[in-house]
Image 1 (cartoon, rainbow, N blue to C red):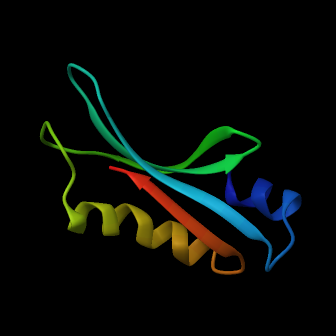
Image 2 (image 1 turned 45 degrees about the horizontal axis):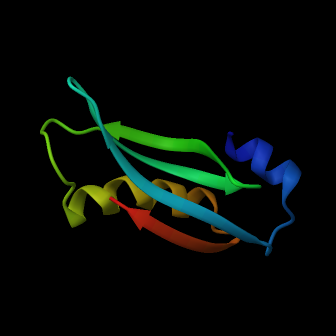
Length: 82
C-alpha cells in the first residue's frame, strides 16, 4: 500500500496504525514498516539487515523516519515487535 493509496483511503488528521516488525528467514533479516488496515498489514517501507538477530534502536529509527515524514498529515499510532 503506497502513500498515495493511503491518502485516498484516509483523510488527513485521521488515525493510522503503523507496525514495525522484523522477520528473519534463513538468508534474510527484514525490518519493515506496515500500515494496519482492517486487521491486514500492508508493507510501506523495509530494509534488509546485514546481520541475524534483533534490530537495534538506530536501525528501527532509520526505517521509521522516512515513513513518519511521508505520513506526517496523520495521527500515527506506532506499534512494534522488532
